[in-house]
Length: 490
Image (spheres, rainbow, N blue to C red):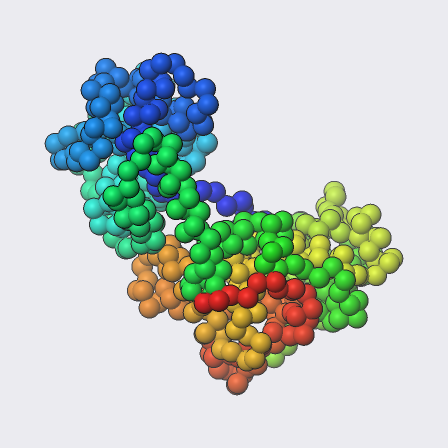
């Protein structure tokens, strides 16, 4: 597993919902009129794509496109009719999948069909047949989109002859995913539809303006599940935590040098850099790891759990040490060249001047934004735990000024992101999934981030008590580090 975080990508199902949100029939009729008159300038990329697709399908669906505004409430029977509006919308979705290589299997299937003498239009239609096998369960049962199943079927069918694919798909069972999807995705559609009911709009622009204003209001309303934060604030905290959250929280740039040097990860980093400076160059092992003697020295000085010491044979036997080495590399303080470890110029300067507040912030941002937290444990991916670290710090700010159980803190996290319970380990019961997520949250966020960075104190009632019974409280350093400007009202 890579020690670096992958950038979050919009999921396949989210892109489908976004396309359907934009492609109401009145709006499609507006695009159709623009496309017919050759006036696609001024439309955004998605609208232009829809216009071009509608023109390509005009022989089949001319009447439906021409009278789309009149047919706004017309229902199509999926068992016996093709819904032309859904058809062109999915066409646009699939063209975007191919263009963006997301998922990559869609591009591979598309290229395989082109090699088998299909036109681009035919290849997209075959791709649509596969996608629909996984979309129908969502709309019929509100089940979760089976992205892994979709990718798997694309891999299988790219080797099939194009003329046989439709018949073969008819014999394929529907997607087996039956768990409930996050109802909020559907709730947005329902609430917007209710708000627009009875409204009289004189133009599509007016209707779009109403919808945009409604969404803006909905996205800025405080939510109890977010402890008073709005969806818009949550989005910024998760995707731009250091760039666009100054109205919520800022990080103190003038931290005390004395307090910083008492933080566990800082102690380890300072010792590692000092010893490497004294011993460099350090010859790496044949597998590229730290030499055994150096690894054992760091491991013995900073054991993972002082109550349960254990010997190691290599760096890979101590994932905390291995993680530290990768983190220092990502910070730009050490390097490996020609199978030898050295301090970089930045590392040498740091050793000379001493570790200060600026270095701490480099370490903090590297750990939260570049280093992959899953590298240190055997839990499922659950990237949301790392992505939402700033919101979880907000939970601590609201709930952990006095001792609170790890169980309560993890419950607040799951309350904010209930859909994550359906994303991992499909063979587990709902109770087991909940327990798995709670323990993952404790290990990754509370223990290996907050305690490691001196942000919380963990009080264990007994050495062998359950982790979720541990009591958590923020430290004075937490209050010095985070300068919160937002008090939730929920």
